[in-house]
Image (cartoon, rainbow, N blue to C red; front, side, top):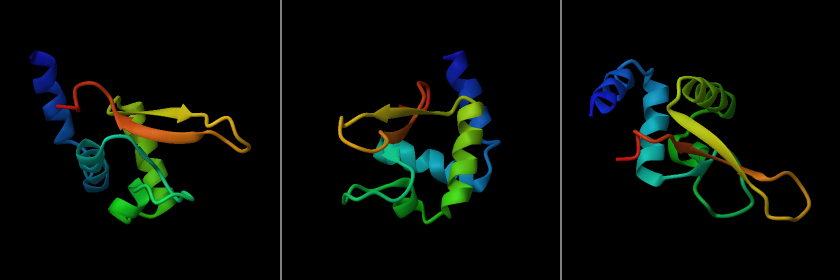
Length: 92
């Protein structure tokens, strides 16, 4: 319980862009950052934050322990898909 209170206090210190990213991940679950060849929603399509700004703020959120990235390999050519999700504590 004490950790959740600290987590909520830390959320108040997020920038407006970081809070928008956090809120979007909380509402939609794991998402890719930018353009995809599928119709899946992405952080870019849902927030309309420029790609580089989105990436910079995801990096800051990851460094501060709010989000984490993971890769999904489809075993085809090309790089694996990278998804972002909230870390435990933000997934109520």
